[in-house]
Image (tube, rainbow, N blue to C red; front, side, top):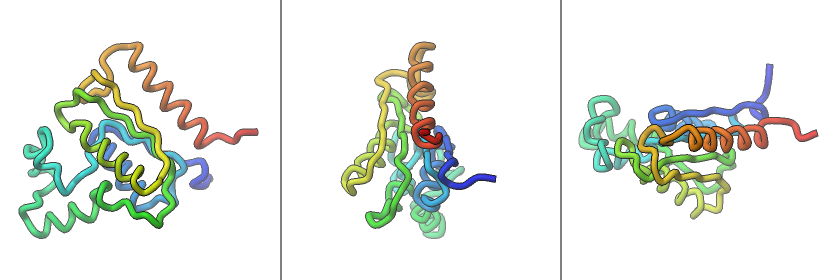
Length: 156
């Protein structure tokens, strides 16, 4: 039907975690990865923003078996220098009080430290929804559309 050259994934919030996990565990399956207002540091999420309230859902680093699982999926910690990753588009909001921009910032910083390319957009307002008004929603969606068209469409 298709090939990874034409496949992309988009997720935000918990879906951003899914996109981040897919990027780190299966980088060869995707040519575009959109990671929005994401949860990406699973080793430290319990101490960030509202993270402590999510331990019942994700598990806790204080429980050894759960900590092993969290380490195995944590996108921030599972980025590897020798791997060829798709160039992701990461977006977040400075004022997000649920997940908090620190997850996206840490992931981007790790990519940057490894010399890996990425796109990053941080809205200074918006909260966890990522945006606050119709013009900003349109702007963010336009950034995503341009990113996807450049990554997934033939350029002939």
